[in-house]
Image: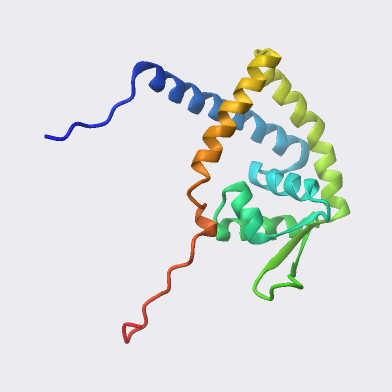
Length: 169
């Protein structure tokens, strides 16, 4: 008879604490981003990722991998940001199949407007209860967990399945 794998009480407690803390933080962050800039969390991630890029632009596929979001979901979010004038989308000069998303001046302005409140919220909710060594340990632990999880390519980087034709090809 096979046994069901289980977590010990410490593992279970760590898991539930991580999920609950993540949910509480994400809820508060989403509210702050919406209030300060009319942005969803994913839209903020996109703008922040573009803002950190030296050229202020990235390929859609790279953005999807970085923010762990589906290609279709990212396309919708990029279209929404483009309609607001916060990003532009253009065909890639290097690869005709790729689309490049670029941050506009208005996008930089919105990002700047939400960033100070975002940082203040993180300081208040996440970092206020932790010492510097706690933050360093947390960064190390979560970084290792993330890196381990990223060993499996994100869905957006996986090869697309080919549809079968009526002839079975």
